[in-house]
Image (cartoon, rainbow, N blue to C red):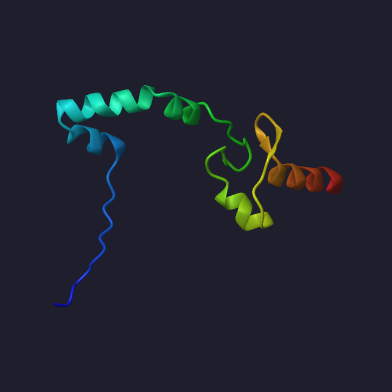
Length: 90
């Protein structure tokens, strides 16, 4: 028998998601968020120019063709090159 497959996109806010969770699901989410894995993600570095982080540098990869790295605590290698170019033009 043939299978039909349809993909749906549903956009909801985090608050809408949490409002529809049961009390036990909320407790499970709370335990997950407090785990070391998610605490580290919430405390990850973020570039002040492009907003990339330890967990998402897709935009930098599109710009440079390779993952970025940290030059300073809030500046990635992809943006450091851009800032140097701007400073040289001044």
